[in-house]
Amino acid sequence: MAYPPPPGMGMMPMGGPHPMAAAGHHHQGVGSLGIPHKFQRKPKLTLRDMRDDYCEFELKNTDTSVANALRRTMIGEVPTIAIDLVDVEVNTSVLNDEFIAHRMGLIPLKSDFAVKMQTVYEAASGSNENNENYSAQSPTELTFKLHKRCESSQTAGIDVTSNDIEWDQAADGLDPNEVDVKPTTLAKLDESGNPEKGILIVKLRPGQEVKLTCIARKGIGKDHAKWSPVATAVFTFVPDIRIDQALMDTLTEDQRRAWIASCPTQVFELDPTTRRVIVKDPEAYTYDGECIKKAAEMGVPGLVEITPRSDDFVFRVETTGALPPATVVVWALETIEEKLKGTQEDIKKLIM
Amino acid sequence: MPEEKADVVGDASDDSMATFALLDETHTLGNAVRFLLNGNNNVDFCGYSVPHPSDHVVHVRVQTTGEISAKQALIDAGNQLVDVCDALESSFDVALAQAPPPTST
Image (tube, rainbow over all chains, first blue to last red; front, side, top):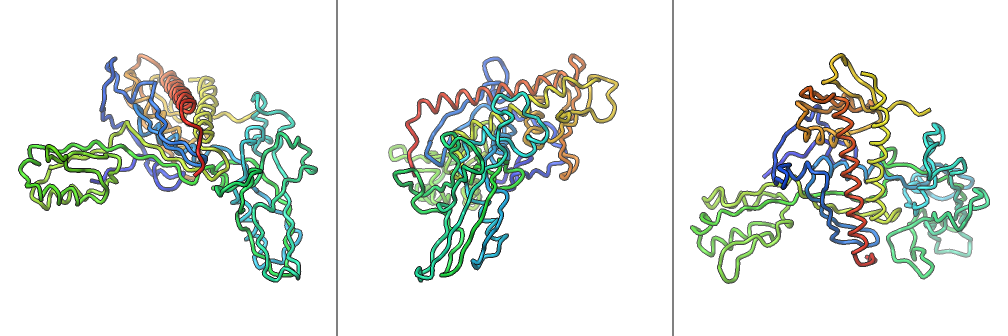
């Protein structure tokens, strides 16, 4: 069964071709005050899995638009730090300058320090005057150096990786205890917390050399995907699956088995005692519609009705390593609040 | 001084209806605000649009029953969304505190 994606929910972070999305009330649960669950102010959040680079949580009693705001903000508006400008002093490698500059930009940098930095726009507009996190000294830039040469004795050639990038403390004049910005990967870390194997930037043959000065800046994914803290940030609708048991009773056990097998994922199973078809795992359903098609083929259309619940979502967030997943979620929520506070002030000032 | 982030588009003589322009905003805020406005019983109609993908602006049309002004309805919706974010943040914090420490993959 196909269902229309809500506005602003294309594959692209900034997608959303809906010209005028007016209201479509389809109330599901109704709460104690007679207010539909999703209009209540207290959505429910349950954490299911939390790892260094991945988290999964369920969001209930809210609407697609709110879930989508969270998803879009995580992708496009949570700030991180990434290399934005590369000064090439020497490059005798096989890759051209801009090719290397692009690769440098895509390397995730540990970005918790982003709260203490300012974007170039913020610094220029002075919009952070009243923000406690910032001061006149808040840096807009961090300098990194990379210098690697393959000596003629290294006949096998060498790899230049993200581990060769070093922060130039002297250039920035910042407290090294405070600045914890360094290239990161999701690879295994050694005992000093550095990735054992960095991200490959370029390979050098004997006699080749790269020498770069890189300026890293704070930014958001909306400006360039290199600043997006997430590799994937998606939510799925938990399906509401209803089997017509009266109709199911008209089928033989072999037919039931065949119908269960028609679903590519293990959504249904045969109850070992009652021999009835039951829903084993609704979340395994991928909205492929195979079981509905199969039911129609078997001459029992309407055997199952599956609708996406529009107030129950499962989020899966996988980070690039720039920020821990919990930070991404919390900063996304804070970003939405900040945006709102900004617009609220100006709406109140409107003379009407 | 930072630029103003909100404006009124078109006729604003009747305060029960207005089209607001939220500058530098996207579907992210537009759709969520639209949803919350539709939850308000005093709102007759609400819709949002991004008039042109190259212009960084969202238009939110609000028509109320007359009990409250369109501006007030929009402010209420914004406050509600802040409440939703606050609630999510605190329940996420609670869930985090209860969860076992993160494991490496």
